[in-house]
Image 1: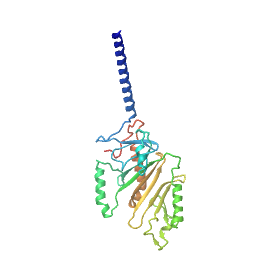
Image 2: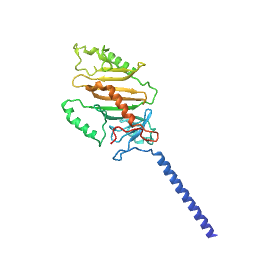
Image 3: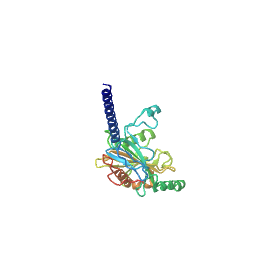
Image 4: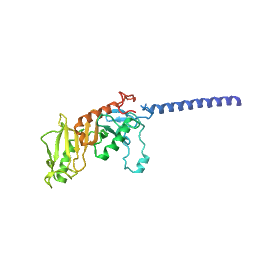
Length: 289
């Protein structure tokens, strides 16, 4: 009797161990299945992944200036307690990206990547051009995914800008007769400082506004350029309907004639990062080290 009981107990224990091991294997397999495939660079660094607007992307390691923010992530100045409790959903190619930034080289359409020649180029340009007041051939780019029903145009933004100029700084923006580089130009008080009767020199609020509309009359490109004192920079924003994104670019005004090329090249860069739902690249990544 005792011998039979011991055999039965041993069999039960063995079966239990088999079931336990099987469940562990299943758990591990399930966890591994949740981890997406990562593209990597020559140093083994994993890409930053997610869904930007309407497309899944894989951003080469070393490209992002700072870090990528995903929808729902606490802001930079959020309560530390909220940040400590926040748990981002598992990474995937469907995780919506709110924003990220990178450095774009205007002269050839390339981008900054650490451990790549462009890193040395960017450092050298900063050291040899900025101290001497020469224009830096790099633009700071920020990309924002759009996920709500807000129209992808700057119609209200520009209308509000003109209203604030009139209500607060007491001057109108006057449309200029001649377009500039294919852009419609508006100048604050027609380019004249009402206090002096001369061209604007000191007022930081007096920026040129340059716009481009689509065939339906919606403003898709909105550029504000400074030109007073030693300031000579443009803040350039545009929407892309295919990607469902808004892009911000900041650069020296000397490169304003290349505004269309910048928009086109930035979309080409994003297109090069597109991936299949499984994370397989659809083309050669621009900026990969």
